[in-house]
Image (cartoon, rainbow, N blue to C red):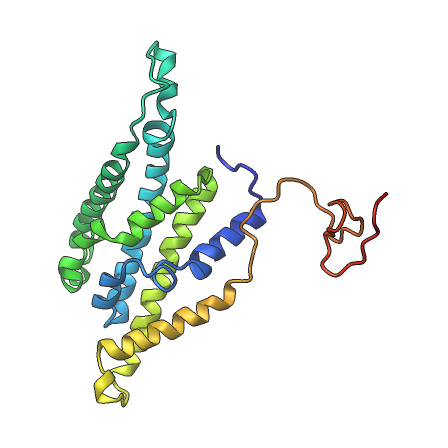
Length: 247
């Protein structure tokens, strides 16, 4: 329930996977509206990135509990200790509604905090701050974590890494756009044109992390170099290794 078969190395791999390999902006292209609208200034992008990290991490954890104890298959079985027959009750149809309600609630709390603590950041974000409630990246990360059935700690690492990846992407493009504002750009590509090109190049760069496979937990001890053919006739655990036919 809490860690499952995940080791600390798997958790590190899951964090790297969520930030770089499966970056919600540059790989899944979720949350592009605020990414393009609030990336003109690095300060604004950092403020929005921190807000997304807070909302997505807390919402992802709370939504895990909702899925585990309310909307998942057999999630209400814990009520049987009170004498209620709830094992066969399925509230899965409420999943979207509850998830979005939790995200919207924390977004409103965050909006109030930012307005009191940093009025300048609140004014620079404008109406894009309330739009965090309907940011598809936040809902997408929560749904991805639920679909993959992560235990609690891997779920926390995944939603945190997804939020940090979103922040990293918008901060990078904001820094690039500030530089491009004082650079000579082909007139036809100024504005959104060059922004999309730079986003594509960043996405291609993040693909370089695709070969890292540390997030999948191992089900048992494995030999680092299995020399014995334990898979059967015609199969070998080492590609290209000689196979001796079994009698």
